[in-house]
Length: 413
Image (cartoon, rainbow, N blue to C red; front, side, top):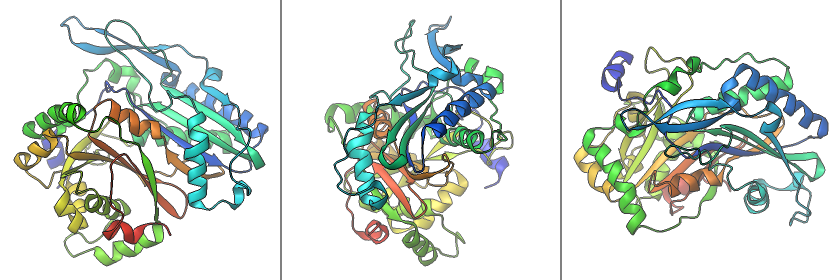
């Protein structure tokens, strides 16, 4: 499908304004060779980043418009740059009896999720809230939390409100932070469009779907929230990049020419989650597909494509075709009932986004991010495919899965 054809399909249905979204894109990372001097450099880097992106010092205000519909009308520069870095006291004693540098991947992940992440503020990954005529939460749209660990390690969390940008913009901010720390300069520019996006009407991302399926997305969370499990505890799996690479070569066919890591992992998840999800949805980044969109454009430029989980589980090349075209591989009628019942999983992909601060040895999405999406009724289940380190990808999910089949063949040993 050409860019013009994609444009014709989705013009008017693309999220180009701020989302009315309570979730935040947040990640936790562990860095080595960290000291107080490096923390000071991070503070200076944050000041440099917000100097070129003033919107990051803001908090959000929402009010009723003249026609009675709620819309975001203003961002207020509420915070001084120094307020955006918060230092959290380090843990008294780790439970592991060996040095951090000797922990293997799974042990380090367990240490992060079991001891470190819970000590970060509970609102990390669950800000910014807004409703009605008054602000209910004046949290910044951008924050960095830092904790010093033993043996010159550190853990940091960078949070960006989903209302002003998606994962692509999140990692551009990360790239700016890293560049400011390592070279003292910021070459990557983000186009916030002179705050025009803030004034524009909000468009829900599910509007990129056919109307019947969109109705399912409106009904599904309500059905699931009433009749589904009250709480789904998130957990993380580690996947071998080497094994994924082998599967890409093994499973590709002549209809697609190539497969990506995301294609293989998403297909593996489709098979592993079939008992809990009849439909898989994935967010497709529209930058590069539409002529008027530049990679530096801030906002939420995504559409939601729908996959029949059974087909995708047996045929990862189907996922490649959907991602390349932006079209769903299942009809609205077939997708409506599972979505209306809340029997679906939303997937998002951070696997190709590697920009982290210099010295980072492990990187995971915030558990709070998954839990906040679930609690907000945004989906029945939510899954993030992410870059863990140079050798492993990770899958963070709140959906029960079976670890056999294709997924079992790419798990980290």
